[in-house]
Length: 338
Ligand code: TXA
Ligand code: MG
Image (cartoon, rainbow, N blue to C red; front, top):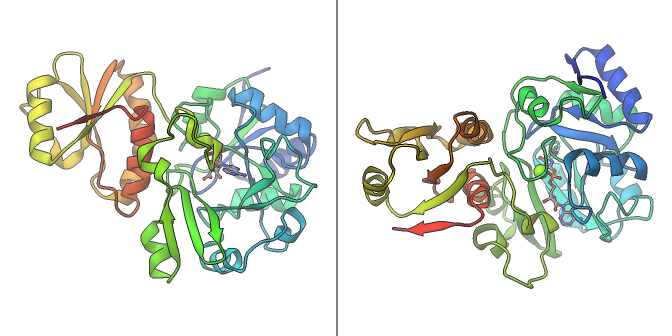
């Protein structure tokens, strides 16, 4: 394929991208979380192309993006009342909800599962595309396993020449993927992937919420996972990452004593220390900005040629939990306890 066409978000370009999608092609698109790789969710061949372009395992299902609550009935059945309560509260936005799927959704889209993940995004370009094309299946627009893209340059780094076009909408507002939930029962939400809709936000809304154990502890061998994405190494740069677990002082001591020469550390801005003898990349101190930039930070480590990276993750509260989860997974759950 030729070079990927770089489109700005003018209406004419959105219409052009919609035409490509309707013709069964895949296009890089902005969302408020990360850039997505969009295809017609109801066209099995188009959806297969997504898997091929990303190198994504066939059993890892895609999120279907909608722009109207009316689409839910068409795509899913036995939808609990709580789904609509949450849709009312958090849609359009970074929340994905899993419900039983209707036959109209091809098996390739749902990775062979009988459920479907639904999300109503807020990004205006993505919404217009959905209005023009119908439901859009879109995973993050990165090579499978690599950090997700939060800028067009990230999409092109991974997929230039593999997709016909990408629409630019600047940096993504949130920077980590949507919160993914399923329903344990009529009243209980289970978080399978943390994001900007935080456990605290569910609690504040009076909703019972449980955090799936795999979010923090990973998937045990032979365990049946509730979300296939949980079992794959993900969000990882080429560099080998190790998580440092302990208080600020111990972590600073470890970095001071053990990290040398070609080692890197990934630490909060506030921890920067002129006496560290290794190189470092810093992430933002406040969780919202931290989330916005974390994938760019991970990609930067590769650009700097980092081989070994020691990571001091943020606290597991609020949006910090989502960043913690991505870093832990980028490190393949390799942790040094201090
Ligand atoms: O913010 C987002 O969610 C972005 C933007 C583009 O919307 N999309 C995204 O998609 O992150 P992806 O494919 O990179 O991640 C989707 C996650 C995967 O971990 C997948 O296993 C899980 O959602 N998932 C999708 N359908 C599911 C289902 N039916 N049951 C359980 N997990 C599901
Ligand atoms: Mg992804």
